[in-house]
Image: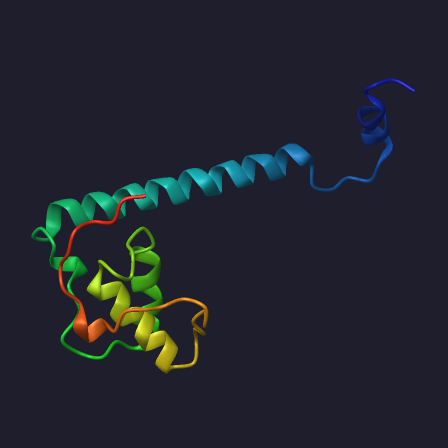
Length: 119
């Protein structure tokens, strides 16, 4: 049996989805996601005043807005980003997120700017 045994069988197999088709589709999806993420970062950088999108909102968030906020603020820590903390609390209150009981969390109403954490 040669190293190319799968190519020999591919010619006699029934037509279907080729591996290369799957690879191409996955690569296209990743490119699309990367472009969307870059567009979102560029929009955030150029549109909003410095620090504004990270402030806690002055209204209770709905579940849909909280989900989108958690996705957009994926790179933020709950301790430093009031908007992510408020979104997290909205999801907890709605029963959509169950926090890890072994961690200590800050109350979003007591958020204040502090020194950045270093790793």
